[in-house]
Image (cartoon, rainbow, N blue to C red; front, side):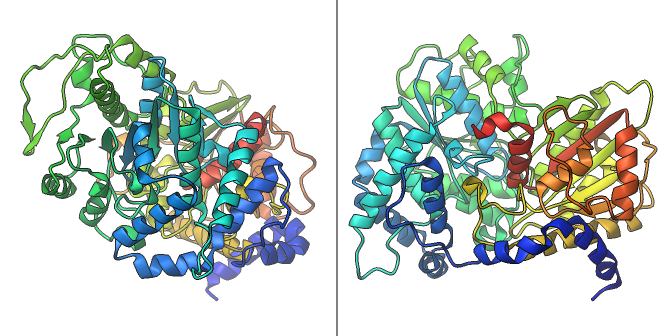
Length: 581
């Protein structure tokens, strides 16, 4: 065991001391064996979600994915079979007037902008996205709102029983896995609700994604590309671009934002191979020229690229459906950039402007101001999205009024999951000059038995705590190495010198759950988050004790929560209790 890890062990013990007894029981429950579905399930929402969670660890499905990874057509054929067993055919999906969107960074925000723009025209919208933040029903929305617990429960059991009744005894996989099941359920909901259109966000990739069963979308979009899910999609941006371009369909218009030359060339070639008309979105500035500036409901400069793509997707949908109110064209002749045709430059309509302004997308560049505490929430989990997050956070701090008296404290709350590189992400966060770095798993409480929406059977509690320890160790090493700003670092990412209250390699802590982390950070000063007394031993560690004094006396506390959308969702669940209702 390394010297650093031996040094970290006491911090983990003290931070999780109150959870020591239940940890073994929880870990056993959260092993890789799925709970059996209840024989006579109740009709309550939580019962439906618990049964849905059993599909997270279908061992047969995982083995099937490994075998079929090199053949996306095989996976799509399997999805067609599930669709047929559910009572639908692929042709039925053609009725949904789908806008299909993929990308690495900003695809969810692009979908949110697009849906809100079209809803401002009075259209009835469906919206399928992932992951959820607080409740799984957030993934399926009608007119921008998550479907009700009652509607979720009704559709869940109808689909679940239909698949159970139609299973083939010769097949080792009788039920689709978690995301596939929800994709099927979204299609059923949208058809029954008779939506005018459905915005569908790709889960992972494009060619391999189960949403790619859609054969006739109205329009497709690809947001910014970068490295993510490299073990599945490939280890270069060009390979990932090939995967994302898998959603292109013959004759269906597609739009993308400005990309680096390599991936842009891949997208262009992919589209040309199947006669898919692909257009490059002009920057938002071109659409604003000659008119008032556009106001976006989502903060951050990087959201302008997502908004520009959303405007093109919405306008193209309206045009294909012969809808009025497309916006006056500013440029009548098509032009080329990087051997690709530019999308139309037009004057956004009033409906479009209102849609962009009124867009809400929780957990992405979101700010909550609570007394002396300001929470900055952004689910950035790739290098490019973390760079954008840091710019947004630093700019927000510059705009924030300085407290008249008392110190100002900056706190990082971080976690990362999957095959993401935490060292790269943490290094990008160094210019923010945090006084404390806090690490915890994506668990609102040590035990999630009463919260089915946030259960994850794919990992054990011990595994996620060890990963948090590794994050703390990486952070400590980065702090020790940092003698000052990295040479050549972009000035826009750096803040003015910030006299830290306790800025050292030792100013980091690991907590066993989000609730304990928030209790230490807020010190009872958040007027909404007022949990019971902290567990015994929470402040026993030296850094926890001294830091608590600093946080109680601080005139302003700025907390950046990032690294994982699931972490952001857990924080929102505690800070915004209304989201759980």
